[in-house]
Length: 65
Image 1 (tube, rainbow, N blue to C red):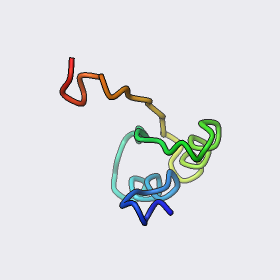
Image 2: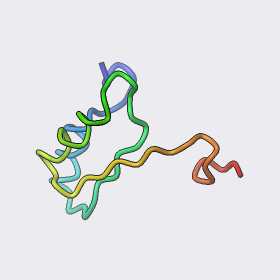
Image 3: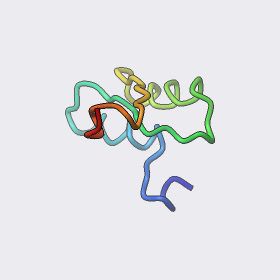
Image 4: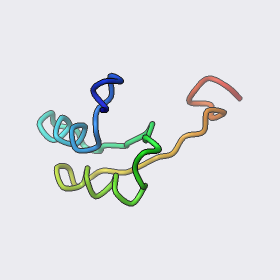
């Protein structure tokens, strides 16, 4: 289903960074279909240095103050 929307699963993102000399994976834009407790372990199996960051749409990262 993630592919239908142009997204990666946590496992796919982790596999991608594991093969590309990345130091840390920070997962954002998490689907509401999955419990937060599922996402990080899924990524961590392929890339142990994974973190999750929930970002508000009002956060400066999106250009709004």
